[in-house]
Image 1: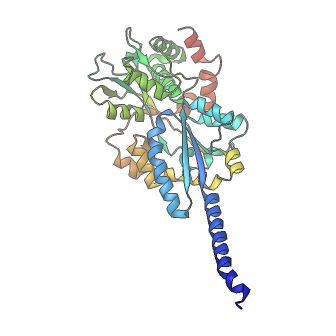
Image 2 (image 1 turned 180 degrees about the vertical axis):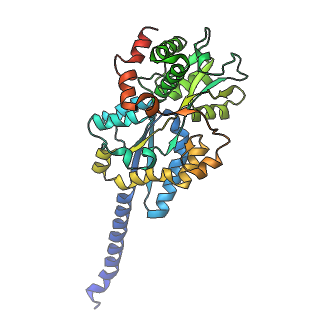
Image 3 (image 1 turned 180 degrees about the horizontal axis):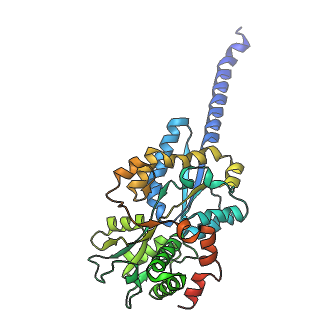
Length: 340
């Protein structure tokens, strides 16, 4: 008579193998991470390429699978969405003031966020340029051409768009230096907005209005967005670099409350740090952002020429003061736009 245990051993082995396989599958499932990057309008192309590079890098380094989702819109509107509960792991917004809003409204981000990464947590920079119709039929050369009669200017709404705030402040400082004082600058910007037929909520919306809907003679644009338009509509648009513009420093930050709750801090932090790597800097330059590394700067110097730029601190005393003076309820933009 056969030992009754003889028939049980294979079944025990199969059961054990199934248990181990299930455990391995469960561990793999637990290991996978999902990140949400809440960003502003013109970074779509940048992060499509960057996300693919980071996913590959992180898999090779740790064996961990990462899925990265993107949300795009006007920078101020995006910050408000996170405050209202959009479950971002990281934000990559247009201006420091929008990240500071996440500090002040609910403590989503730690107040020391700018000290966590190099270059005040701005891994790339940009500036504001002018995009005109091919051949520049209206002869637009600088900011003061935008207030001439009959010139239609496309720019988004500073209440919802970070890019629009950079545009506004660049025009203001140009006029202040050329015409003398803030009162003259305010008159200039008011005249400029009289030539604006529509205010889209974000920079990409204004880009579509100008390039696809063929509205306007000139589009006040992020430099990277201008180059993307030139790449796509090369025979239809030209880029004009004004005599003076602003150094835009789009910041990045981990959303502390969310990553600590979700357990994604390590991956989220690595995701932002990789923007400073040779790969991240090269991708920034390839997508027409200005890298901060000397190596990438040298590689992309021809497409991103040196300009006469001022900083938000130099001209306006930083974002907190600029927001209060110009974009808060009752500030200069409200005064200008309501009376245009």
